[in-house]
Length: 414
Image (cartoon, rainbow, N blue to C red; front, side, top):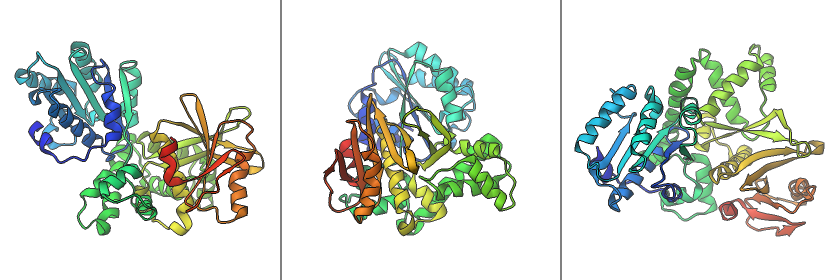
């Protein structure tokens, strides 16, 4: 298994590898989380390749389990995992550092007991990495059993920068539209006859998330409603989605589902990381509007595979979703501000005590559109950075301290 990993042609995602290096030789557990198929296993394997090639570990000191492989199907609980680990120690050079990596750890019952045991016994001479795709099965471990002894790395789909590297194409507006349509799941690049089959692959990923992470785990019975609700949410990314307006819509269709059930079903998607929920905040009181929530999808390709992609109609939503995902990737805490007269600030993004404001649109096609986008930011009388982001080929420059930039320049200011 280790020889196979060391020979795999893996494209490295340096954005994450550079973060991970800072925590090597630190006696804590390194945890990779987020949605299925975002590349957690590939990052873990490329890390192993790097560390072995640089002599950090001898290859016989690599303990690696991937619960998605049938080879490890027999490992059901922490007893089985410990037995496997003890067999590994028989041939390892225990005088040197060892690497412990468990992929999709949420599928192992009592996994936290094995992880804590390894940390207690080998914390000065081992690097411990685990990955997981379901927050209800993993985050409970993090907060309850691993509290204060772990660092979490949220692994997102490919950024546009990474997409350009994977496709070996220069960044351009044309490539950006391709990225908005197909998304950034690394598995896209393993598909033969790529253009014809990519949405079929993405639909299969979506079905796997529904069946394995939602229906099976949460015991969902009304699968038809579940799928209809999530299609509704896909259509409405970036729009206000509340349990009440969904329930009212369903009543108009003679479907009786309570707001409580709607909220419950919506929470499933955030728990498996397919959607992120963002709350609206009153800038004066700092209180959240519980009924004015928005949802953004982790990967736009999945959304487009299920409900289609119409740039003429959807471009504003897709761009807003892209900006939100970028803010998450760079560790910003994000909210929406609801101002007077129905105006909103699209994103208030805060990191390390520094706050930035963002408005997002497709094009500033004329003065009236520019006024609509700049106006909410002009009402803010502080000195924080304010940006209007669009896909215009020209910049309007700096207006009242508000900078207009191309969305393609977003990474430069994050």
